[in-house]
Amino acid sequence: MPAGCTLVALNPFQPIPDLYSLDVMREYHSAPQPQEAKPHIFIVAEEAYRNVQGQLEPVNQSLVVSGESGAGKTWTSRCLMKYYATVAASSSVLKSQDAVDRIEKRVLDSNPIMEAFGNACTLRNHNSSRFGKYIQLQLDRSHFLVGASVQTYLLEKTRVACQPANERNFHIFYQMMKGASSEQKKEWKMGHGQSFNWLPKAQKTLEEDCFQETVEAMSHLGIKSDKQAEIFRILAGILQLGNITFDPPAKESEPCVLEGQSKGKSQGGIPEELQACLAVRTLVAGKQSILKPCSLSDCGVRRDCLAKVVYAHLFEWLTSFINRSICADNSAWCNFIGLLDVYGFECFQRNNLEQLCINYANEKLQQHFVAHYLRAQQVGVQPEEYVSEGLEWSFVRYQDNQSCLDLIEGNPTGVFPLLNEESRLNRASDAGKFGARLQKELGDHGSISWDKFSQEPHFSVTHYAGPVSYQIQGMMEKNKDPVPPEIIALLQASANPLLGQVFGDQEADSTAPRGLSKVVTVVAKFKNSLESLMKILHSTTPHYTRCIKPNPDCKPLTFHKREVGGPAPGTLLGPLMFSLILFV
Ligand SMILES: Nc1ncnc2c1ncn2[C@@H]1O[C@H](COP(=O)(O)OP(=O)(O)OP(=O)(O)O)[C@@H](O)[C@H]1O
Image (cartoon, rainbow, N blue to C red; front, side, top):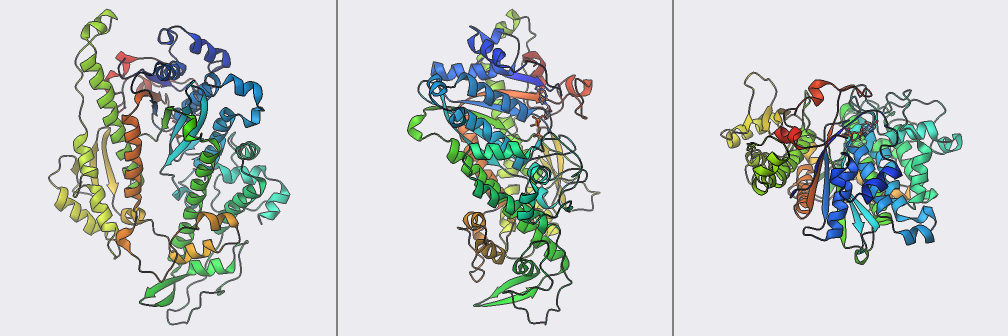
């Protein structure tokens, strides 16, 4: 098919013996016509691989794996990576090198690390990826796998300091608690049996709580034990941060000295200096700095902000380290197969900036899918082909979602540009005022509406997958994502070399003018990285895999008609789903 094969993969919620074994890989790899073999994710993998071998333009391939949370995207992506690590392994490498050094092993070892730091147990999936990723598998002239690179998107860092009810923090914290030795815990200043506010559901044991596997993978990728120790000390520090309490603030008139001052004792290994920094804000007035005690709630906000910024930077550092370890030299590879595993469309009772970004990404992917798949199907394929295969054919009407994209990203009066403008103003954000501005600027747009009866500032977007109402309260702050410069300065001076390294190039001079107009907002950063991704997707041959979650409770071999019986509103495949393809 001109737009490549599209696969529907049904999650059985139970390992099926030998479904992804080496023998099955070999079977699909050696099949003269893989498309004619039993439907399987390996058909998609093999077809993409043969396209690269065939060198037909566009030679590079993209495998887009989509579906709701728990549908099986990460599982499917892992299967695809294992397939290439097996069929595209260079035999000479196999013979000549120790297994530990092999690039395929290192590429696969990136998975447990990324999952330990980026996945968490949620109500919808016990191993839910809290970030999006695009993995580029690099192939040399002989089509052997010689390297890979990972690009991540929008880590849900709020989870570090605030876990939704009945959900957990990132796996790595539980792995440390459950798998570390008593000497390690002592070194991290974690008391025996100590409980942590930011580790809910610690008594729940999951197969993902595998500290040794993560540590081994880190070692294989070249993260030395002293660097690992620095990482774990940072993570332990984050947990201890969640346990500190603040004294009521000093009166505003009281003189306040930042350096070395602490209102309380050092708590749980958190240096007094850091505690003081969380409790006292530095305000810049001309050349003078004024220290102002924070309210109790502000202290909490600053503490959470510190935890989030440290965790997000650590995650970024890990991703860069992994890339340095697995990325091939530019001269060593010439083609790639990209693997995209992104969060599906989200609509909760309350939606904010995170959902707006995720749903915007899904709009972009939907547009790509429509352009490449449906158009190619209907323009490029003759009805007789369907008839000859016994399929009913009728022209499928598809909706162009450009109008919704214009609403969100349109310049200068889309939701994103207006939000950025508001976030860059040097004043406290006002949700009501911003709501009124949106109504004034975008009131006539067909893809936005307002619920007259709602008391809260909000706006509703008519997405291709359905309407979603977004709360405006907190949206500008999330978009600014400010980190007080005095906190950055303290991190840079940290005794932990890794902290100094990851915050080394951040602007921390609290006496410098704030320059809000230069603030790179969350939305601006996300839009940029998404644009780069779309450029890559447009330059490759796409293959879509739609994962289906057959029941909401993740029960083995349970298929609810509502989930699998027909196309749910807004599924990426929409009305073509069943006339098209295949089940795993
Ligand atoms: N093909 C499969 N065979 C057996 N079990 C599977 C398969 N696919 C998924 N699962 C099971 O379903 C669970 C959820 O799958 P996965 O984590 O891949 O979902 P996801 O779509 O990536 O979700 P999220 O968006 O929350 O990250 C897995 O942990 C695994 O237990």
